[in-house]
Amino acid sequence: VHTTHYGRVCPIETPEGPNIGLINSLAVFAQTNTYGFLETPYRKVVDGKVSADVDWLSAYEEEKFTIAQANAPLDEEGRLTGELISARKSGEFMLSDPSEIQYMDISPKQIVSVAASIIPFLEHDDANRALMGSNMQRQAVPTLKADKPLVGTGMERVVATDSGACVVAKRGGVVDRVDASRVVVRVKAEEATQGEVGVDIYNLTKYTRSNQNTCINQRPLVKVGDRIEKGDVLADGPSVDMGELALGQNIFCAFMPWNGYNFEDSILLSERVVREDRFTTIHIEELNCVARDTKLGAEEITADIPNVAENLLNKLDQAGVVHIGAEVKPNDILVGKVTPKGETQLTPEEKLLRAIFGEKASDVKDTSLRVPQGIEGTVIDVRVFTRDGIEKDSRARAIEEADLDAVRKDLKDRMRIIEGDIQARVRELLLGKVAVGGPTGVKANAKITAAQLNKIDPTKWFEIRVENEDAASALEEYKAQLECEKADAEARFEDTKRKIQQGD
Image 1 (cartoon, one colour):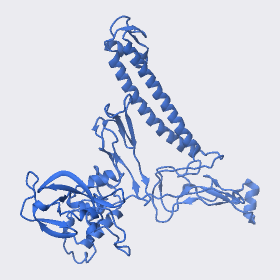
Image 2 (spheres, rainbow, N blue to C red):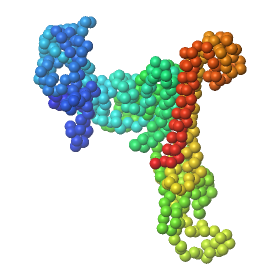
Image 3 (cartoon, rainbow, N blue to C red):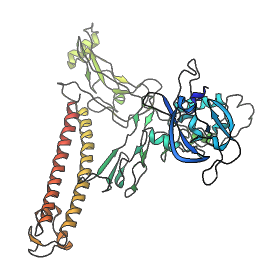
Image 4 (tube, rainbow, N blue to C red):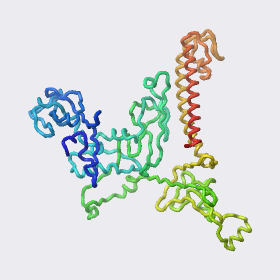
């Protein structure tokens, strides 16, 4: 490890294979400066007292200074104690007088990468095994139920929130609605922009395939009415438990021989580990089926497949596509497809059948998409893509409608919160003001009371004419804002609808 790597490049995390030492990871606090050199932060020390000032130094700048370790003993005032302090200068380790110290490391984990920093008691591990551990964390597959570690290093929450796997609140506020697939937040007035009614809708990713064929699923952590702040975790992602990184499970281990069954690298598992699905993972496979135009005619996706038993078709709909939720086994048909085949010599039996029934069943062959060997599970989603100019089948239209319903739901919730907020402001504005006229139920030249407003439909509050000119103009502004929001919601929906229906 080179002296200039200290706090800039991790000495532990590097590949085990032929690229060892050639591929390196950035240390936890390292950053690049304007010239592209790596810098690491140090706390400034003045006359033996550690200040709150932090300076970022490159390897070249660092050589000039005497730098103490992060664990150097300090008193209550932040002064270095002891006669000699372990320090570094010009890449050499030395013992130095406290008065000579100019900088101090900001954290003991400054020298390692993020992956190495989440290994507990890293300082007690052999370097080779720590290298394997930091590399193998990347290979962890999300378990069925994440279990946050009992022993951590304090980096788990940072890693989980910064990885993008969790849903993090953009603005503070109150949770208005929650279900398995989305969280609706009514934003705090002080965090919303002037005159805007703040609504944040977080759509969660549900049972989606990752590039590694594992399952990405986000689960909400908040309840209706919860107060949240900016940066709070609203939903857990894969391998995240209560906003903390949780790659494995908390399992009771014994380090002991057991009749030779755990010789060398072998391990023994209790039946309970398997029965409780502690290390069970969900994998998602994507299977495709394409209907093309062939020389002999177009292929067709259909549930009418020749020479296939009825019980093999019971999982398909009228369009010939499998239902969502169907449990399938190897060789089950997922998409029924027939391909035209060339005129072949008919057997006497086929000639007879054709003469009697007049059917053309023998002109097509079964080329359906089937479940490959070794795969068994549940169908969780179906997508149908149609080329422009070709009429969409019933299944494609149903999928399109479901997508539009989700968009409608989001816009409806947004409008509900906006209307509620504007109505609350209008109510506050009108109470106690003298009315000049308005809808039935409003007495002219009398103060408006809460009882009167309760009897009138909130949509008609804008028709109330008040004596106070400022209040009247504010009322007009609120009315215009509400109409503008409605028009905006309508335009958004139409835009999304066009994108969904037209495709790329």
